[in-house]
Image 1 (cartoon, one colour):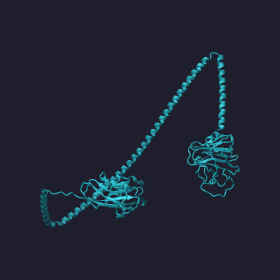
Image 2 (tube, rainbow, N blue to C red):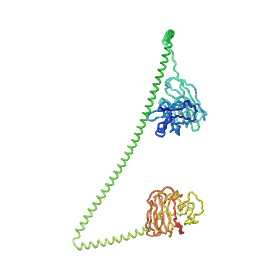
Image 3 (cartoon, rainbow, N blue to C red):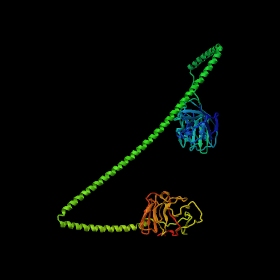
Image 4 (cartoon, rainbow, N blue to C red):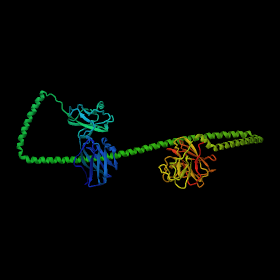
Length: 597
């Protein structure tokens, strides 16, 4: 039979310190798939719970949230511990550590004793004993010294040796969720005294007689303080009437007669003393057995309550998942309904368009029938045909003229775009240039040498791709620039993000932040994924690059014959963009930036 072992001695600590509550299974057993937890006097008072391999914070008592750390380094051996931070006076008392698997429940009891400790501001009380009457209201007084404003502090009242909270005040509001049920609706903090460095608490209708100790607790970011006030409830004295006095005399006489009779009876029963002792022992044993049965019954009931709570938790999670599924299905049906409505509207518009076209054809047929009736003779028909041929020839000539005009505009489209875009005076950034690339002094021409230059490396410099970036960073607007490539046999050029990867081999594509063209082995390519082959009417000696950042568009033009080469599908850009150039071979023909027009 396995059992849970904890500390046999009480843990003595002070307010504000941390406490470790260890317990383990004996003999050792892996507890990773078990439910492990620490509770107070009832199963609903959960200090900490570990289940399904993770913390169950939603089950935890509010006053312990953020103050517990589960130590499970040796959980495979059944050895665990719970650290409670920033101990409070209300944390004193018994705790139960338990392990549960398949509704088999084992536990051990540990105890924490909290000693008083004061740091920061001291807390004072007005009196040690407050005598009051049953069912009357009372006021508990508590004050900070030296006097400081307590509006931004946490204020708590606790009952000594009882973990439940009498009253909690935090962030200018009462924390009803932390308050014990028996005190709800019966306590009131005198808020007008909080600004006056006090925390006076009014308790309505004190119920139970006897001595009751209460703790006042202030807490702020850099300290805390506590004090206690004891309440003694007394019964109101009343004057005794004459009838009451006579009754007391009669009762006293009866008491004396009964006492004398009992003394005489005791002398007569001295001989039966052993029997009495045996009966007393048997009665004690019977009481012990009865207590054991009650304790076992309570344990069984506690395990049953725990099983019911676990079942209800699972059912609640199942209902939550089912509700999420129904919400998702409802949302899907709503989207489908909207789609069907749009499709219906589209079909209605299409039908209306077809009706309009049908009516137009009917009118045209009627018109042709009327015209046919007009041509009553052959001469009239021939004359009409000649007129139609003349009109047709005129229409052909007009359309030819429009075609030529449109073609001329197409050739001038790049020049027209220049009027809509802002010219950029590009300069190459030497800190990004590959060691084999040689830049001119003004940073406007670049060629590739046969050997790397002896230059300092940095995080911005390309170490594998023979690339160089422009100094200009573009984050908005429309911009263009021109690059002269001449008769060079290979190059890559375009725009890229300023933060592209510069170390190691990188594929030039939009996915990696590059939008550009390539000439390699007499073939032109757009650097898409995969690359797109381009068929050009004339080899470009000058390339125009047009960047519309806000529209997400990059276009390339052959400025030799003013023809469009390629433009990337409009998308969206993120971060700064800049020009880039890549040289494949050591061809001594440079790539240069054309001067600003």
